[in-house]
Amino acid sequence: MDKKYTKKSIIIFVLATSIGFLFGLEVTDRAAMSLVAFFSVVYSFYILSTSILFGSRYSKEMYQKIDEKNKKRGIHYIKNYLRRFGRFCIFSVAAIIIFALMKLNSFSFLKNISYSDVIIDPILFGISAVNVYYMILMLKFITDAMVEESKLNKN
Image (cartoon, rainbow, N blue to C red; front, side, top):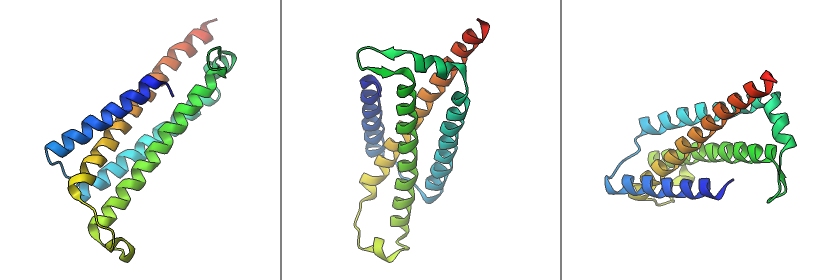
């Protein structure tokens, strides 16, 4: 992933976490389940993006392009983006579920783990903000790919 996107992801995470901490934002049970549903939809969006690109002429064109600096084909950048975004989305769902279970104290092995809502809830807001940023990046990429695909079909 490009360094500029990684830096922006870190900045977004720190800002959203700081805002959550400063304003004392809290992830309720209802909000946690809504976030899980939202991230499930986001993950399906990533899968849909992969299926759209799978047979496209654009992906074949990206395979032909080679970045001379990094010695990578363009399609490998797309693959890395989709992997990173998908893994982060799965991590987000798992983190929200684990923290929601910790709040409920419904499992015996979680009762011994101490945590602070003051710290965990803002981190969950930071994770959510990064997921939204990744979704916006993927949407931008898909729309750019649609334009390129139409140019390739025109020829």
